[in-house]
Image: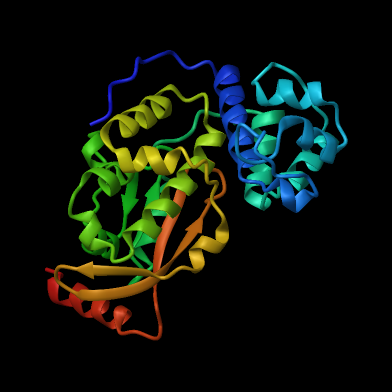
Length: 290
C-alpha cells in the first residue's frame, strides 16, 4: 500500500503545466542521442536528449524550451509545438495531448453531463450481442446494456468507488484472471484514461480519484507514471476474456464519442467473427431472460 498523499485543491492552470512538464521530461528521456547524431557519452547524467539538444533540433531558444519543461507560465506558438512534436516523435494522439496541455482549449459551454439521453441508452440496448457500457471522464459506468452487464458484471455506478471500472481493474483481484491478457488491457485502459484526464485536468473529483488510485495500487501508479497517451492502434489487440459461465470469449473494443456528450465514451466489445463468441453470448442471453 502506497503512502497517502496530501490532498490539495486543483488549480487548472498549475495542474496543466505540471502535466506538461512531466510529459515533456518523460518523452525527452525516451529518445536516443545517437539517433539524432549526438554522442552518447558517460557525462550524461540522465537518459535521453538534453534540453538544449531538443531546443537545437526544434530550432527554438533553449530558454523557451527550458521554461516550458519547467512548467513556467509561458505562451508558445503552434509552430513551436509542431516542431517539438516532430522532434519528440509523438504520435497523433500524443501530439494532440501536447497541444491541449501547452495551448489549452475552450471549456465546454455546459457542465459535463452525468446522465445519458434516453436515445443513448436505447442505442446500447440495440447492440445485441455486443457488450457495451457508457463511461464518464472518471470511468464511472453511466449505463450498460444486457450483454455488458452479463459479460463484464457491470451495473451503472451508484457512486461507490468500488464500482468504478478503473478501480475494479486494479483493485478487484478477480479481474486478472478474467482478462487473459490483463497486462495489455490495463496499459491500454490507463493510456485512454490519461487521454481523458488531459481534457478534464481541472476537475477536482477526477484529481482526487487519480490520487486514490495511486494510493491503492502500485501497478496503477507504475503504468500511470509511464505517461502513455492512448493510441488507437491499441484497439487492434484482441481482448481475451475467461468468463466464469461462457468460457473463453474474444473480441475487439470499439470506442465511440457521442456528439453532445464530450465526457462520455461508449465502449463496446465486438465479438471476433472467427470465434463462437457471438453465438455464446446470444445463447446465454436467451437462456437467462425471464
